[in-house]
Image (cartoon, helix red, strand yellow):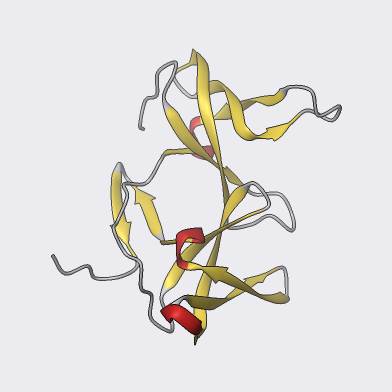
Length: 145
């Protein structure tokens, strides 16, 4: 099991209905024991919207922030994370729209709980999806250096 320390930047995996496959940036505030932490969300606020939301979480709900992969062009069927609603949501590129000045927007399809949603994103709102498995990162796309 991966161990975190106070101050580490992490992502919290949300498993609530309607939020599957979403990750929210947070900071480790303290370690309660080897498997539990107090985290403070970087983007989510308390109900009164005055303070960053804090939560007790198990280590299985946390992962380090994925390493940056320098990609600005995506292909159809690429698995990506799209930044929306204060977190990263896993989806798949389904279409590219090349606009004026060569700016490209991407249609990303999200599936969850039987629903299908499609939204448009700029490349700076996307990252290649990576899975954290047994302490290692695995990319959904083969990256050529």
